[in-house]
Image (cartoon, rainbow, N blue to C red):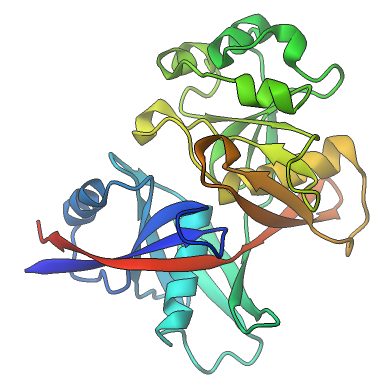
Length: 300
């Protein structure tokens, strides 16, 4: 029996752009090994499996090509766009907020309709965490294929997480970003404090004039891919980083728009809002998604 998987591109409204995700809308009959086999066969960076939940409106598990991960932003955006498109979301939500169970906790998700009635999925992530990078800046530069002088002169290189850890790396300019050519086989030794982390460089020079920052995302070697086109969780971290280390904005300001994916021909954008309470930074991200096609995978 074949398994139906929907292919959606997240953080874009254009087919072939943004970040592709596989979506399985009714996954309750699949075992862990089934879900991993399906995700591996689909071949995207992440596939979302939608399940019922005893503690929330629904549950999603996320599988990459070779392992399960706790949270995936772009697959969440795509999954809720798919559920909305199929009218499968609970219809009695007066406040319009759906509670999503993930391995990173229970997260609020809402859907805003744009002027043309297409859905914009808004995802609240976990409270941002930061940790120092104690590795060698020279070695990190070599791993990225640049020089240490190509890092931003004053901003810190730090680990950050709103559900998955990434190393936030401020770069000097767009030319530096475009010149990066990472060596993933050296990531683990370079990121000794958090060897399973990804690397998320950014700069303030952008291609889209509406964007505030330009980013790339080099995945953890265990993910099975080198570069992720447009990342939700890492964009949430970058939004919190921007508020903490760059611009101390107040709550209620317009979102920070992050562009990503240009270097791999799959450009897209993420809107990020950050609110602060004491030392805590709470992050919301938002993005659109585009249905591409139905995929049939042989059941494991």
